[in-house]
Length: 443
Image 1: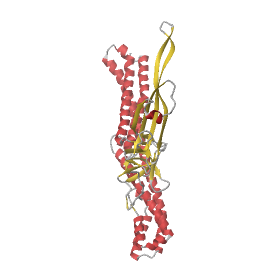
Image 2: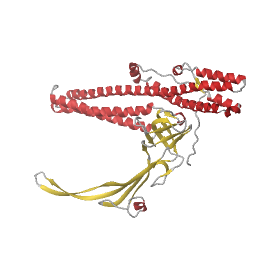
Image 3: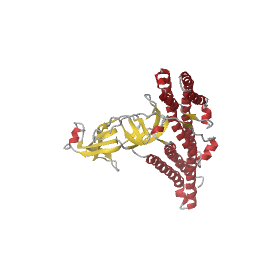
Image 4: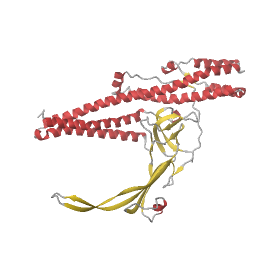
């Protein structure tokens, strides 16, 4: 019986059928992991890359939803009409005779729908960030639901004037929205705005998530976690059942035989699940490492841009009639920062110090400097550059924290050692400030 081809076929079939369930289980688990690995940033700390932010939904000019007339940043509505019809059909009975019968079909047909969405801001205790919801998945909450007949003002007032075939003249009006001032959780790809030195979150087809939701981060992650567990358990049941069904007839109640074949199915499934877990977990660690590297690349670009500005700033300071001590102090700062090697900064052997505050102080003390176009242009470019460095530093350090924490815990640490993944140093800097962006929100 142990080599019965029928039993082996069913065991193999159960294992093969369970593999897609194992794959989608691990896929859901990886999405949950991605949510957990991505640090929830303060809006003041968002820069380039995959980000999560939470705060309240704000906008300069609020939308008004179509049905509920709620002030919001996004809304979607639909009108469905109920229908019922009697269908006469022919069929062949068990004796081969042709007969007819009637049955009633019913359902709902969407007869009108619409919505509107605008770029809005997520506001928290540190500031705000622009979100462009076009192309993103937006999960609002139900703000309006009504079922009515022609006697209600909404039936024709907010719905079409005609009727569908077989209509029962009952319509369902539904609307979801992201109301103004309500807490939102946003996941997506951050990029630099074209108009000012600030980040914005927008849809990116390469991003794992592009989501605006009223659910919390824990609720979103828990949903994927629950899905992963349910699919994983279902796959185990399918694989075990494949082994049991093949021998249940011949085993004649022999529990040892049933346990053996059921155990083989379960063991094969768990082995496949473990392999999938190892591959997906390692790939997730590598992806997180690449996010750290991309974060540093953003910093590296801005550090080099700043290094290119410093010689011109030094020449401007030398040409100005400043107090000797102040001149030497500022030139010493410029020289020390010009000598900063980005590679040394990355390894924690050198630190970056902001120059813009010192230049601003000099400009305030010597108003004549502001009359020079060259000085003003250099000062503005320096301020923007150091603002970008400040943004990039916050994002980079948050990603480094997530990566270092991941490779320090079991069992991820074992995969990290096998793959040669090592912790990163934090980017240390002082005197870097982000420029404030003023926006007047709707009340």
